[in-house]
Image (cartoon, rainbow, N blue to C red; front, side, top):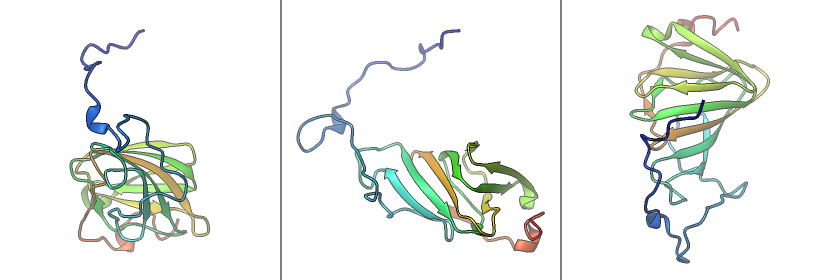
Length: 160
């Protein structure tokens, strides 16, 4: 079945992305040149490969998030941003719901979508290995930290 692209604008003006050289061209962020100037949720190391801070992007944030062994974020949400994630390595858990009583677990190769304004807690399930995610958000890396929840109040966290 052919996808229906009729609802999308297929032509337009991309001149707002013109580089200082005058060209409209792809912008490469080389490994090690990522921007660490990004919001966080209490200890998650986020680096942006594509963001408003260092590319012409205005409606996209794309980066890598690293969590140390045993790490869990503070409770937070990402405002109006839709969030997509991909687990590069490690095992992850996301707590959500009323009082964070629900969770989903993920492992290397899994993808996740987190809806806008959804309070959650991101966790590295391993006590010995780091967790690395690729994450993308539109329009930007919005992080709204919330009052935290105690470890003991996260179902199955202490005895993982």
